[in-house]
Amino acid sequence: VRIREWVHTRPFEQFVEQEFETNWFGEGASALRKKVFESCGWYYEPFFYGAEGHDLIVRVLDHGFRILHVPQIRVYHWASETGRTAGRQYYYFTRNYIWMAYKDYRFGDGLAFLTPKLLMMLYFSWRSSTYRPFLQGVWDGVRGLARVRPHRTPISKETVRYLRELDKWRPGIIVRLSRHRAQPQI
Image (cartoon, rainbow, N blue to C red; front, top):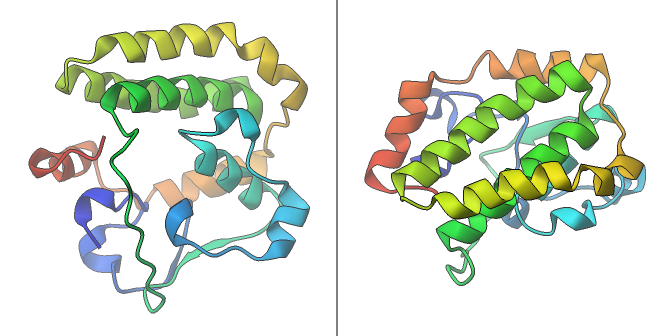
């Protein structure tokens, strides 16, 4: 496990070798039961790249399933760098976070979800001097809300509370930013 890719809410040093409930899984390194997809649906197709897993995660949790980090199970995912340009990632993640905030959350909860995500994407684009894709993602995200409206199914207040409970374990912003010093994730 490379620390820069540890996005679970629990501190890496304490929990890398422990089983715990989480609000994240890497799509290239996970296993889901067929029953999960039957209950929650498949990946949301307009999110073909960027935040598609996060959208599925909130629906999985909203349907009463839980996500476990199980360190005894090892999965290796060799990600291709082809197509993983900063511009592409900044655009799609930014756009899709806006759509996800609208699609999966009620207004206040959507703003609470979206604000740190947009600040994170702004920071990454600032760090790499790649502003245009970020700004285009904001523009297309807002313009595309009508496209998302028919699929709007906000998660329950109970799921929002559960996500907040998991987030109480999350290390502070300084710790999270320090992970990206040596080897930026995006």
